[in-house]
Image 1 (tube, one colour):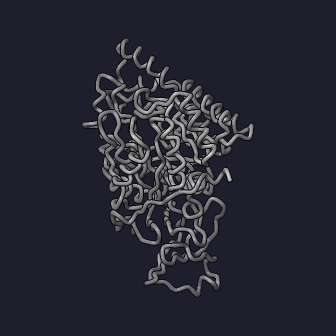
Image 2: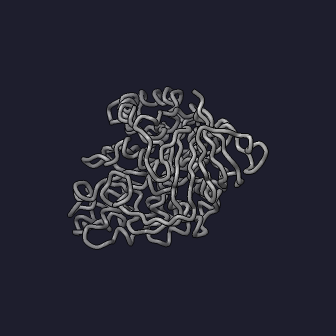
Image 3: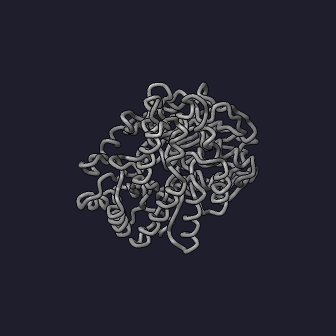
Length: 467
C-alpha cells in the first residue's frame, strides 16, 4: 500500500534555501516540493494532510555525537537506545550517530556487535555508529578497512583518559595513516590527558575536591595543545581530522589556523559550551556535578569565539555529546572527589530548540541553524542527501516547527531518562510540533505516537567534504 502525506503552507527551511512550499511525501521519502498555492501543489492529493501554516518545515536534526548506555566510571549513561532516541524525536532530531566502543584487548568487531545488539529493534528514529578505538594495533588497523566497507566510516580516538580510552601519539599516527588509505575520518577527543592527570592528582592533594575543580584542572591550554598536536599528526599522515566537543577559544584558533592553510580539519561544538559556563560548575553544594563533562565548561568569555567560529565556518557542526548520568546515584559517586564524577550531560532533546534560540538572539541565521544541526553533520558523516535536507528522494525525516511558541526547559517535562536538566528553568522561543521519520509520524502535535523498533541502522558512506 502506497501512502502519501502532504505538509501544506509552511516555510521550508534548508541549509540552502527558504521557500514557502508544500511538501509531498510518498512511501517514506520526499516525493516533491512545490510553491504553496501553485498549480502543481494544488493538484496533489494525500492520505494525510498536515497544516504547517505559520510554521517552519525543516529537515529532521542529525545529532552526530551521542552516547546511549555508555559504560563510564563504574556506571552507565542513563539513557538506553529506546529512551534516548525517543527523547531525540521529541526534540526534532531524527538521526543519531552513536559510538560503539572497543574494549582494550578485544576486537573492533566484538565492540561493534555489542552496540548493534543494544540498539537493534528498540530505536524510535534511525541511527548509525562511529567506532571508538581504545586499542590501536596491527589487527585493529586491518579491521578499520572492513568497518568502512560496512558503513562505519569514522573512528574516535582519545588523547585523554589514560588507562581507559587513551591512545599515544604513535597509535594515533598509525590510525590516521590507515584512515588516509581507507577513506575513514578520525574524530579526536583533544585534551592532554597525561598532563591533566598530574593536575588532578595535585588538586586532590591540596584538598580541592569540589566539582568546579574539574574545570580548573582541564585547562583550555591543554585542549589547545592537544588540538594543535592532533592537527600536526593528521598533516604528517595526510589524513582528515574532526575534533569533537571544542570548548575553548584557543582550540578554535588552532582549527582556524589549520583551515586557513586549506587543511581538511573540522570542528564540532555543543550547546553546553554555547549556553553554559564555569558559573554552573561552581554552583553551591554539589550542584556543580550536574555540569561535569569533558572537555569542561569554560568561562563565559569563550562563548563569543565559539559563536564566531560557527558563523565563519571554522566550526561546522553542533552535536550534543549526549551522555546523561542521574544526579542521584550516579553523579554523586564523586562527592568528595571531583575526579570520580561521571563525565557527561543530557542534551539530545534540547539541541534544536537551543539553536533556534540562537537564531532568535541573532547568533546565527535560520539557514545556518539547519546547516550546523542537519545538513553538515549528514555530509560530514556520509548520510547526505538521504538525511539532512528536504529534497526529492531524501528520507522523509521532517519537523514541523513552531517558531513562535515559548517553552521552559525542565526535568519535569523533558523525556530524557535523567533526573535533572542542564538548562533547568531556561525559557526558549520555538518548539517542535510534529515529527516524521521516514514518512511515519513519531510526534503528532506534541504527542508521542512513535514506536520502539521503527528506527533502523543506517550505513554511511565516507565524509562528503573530502570527495
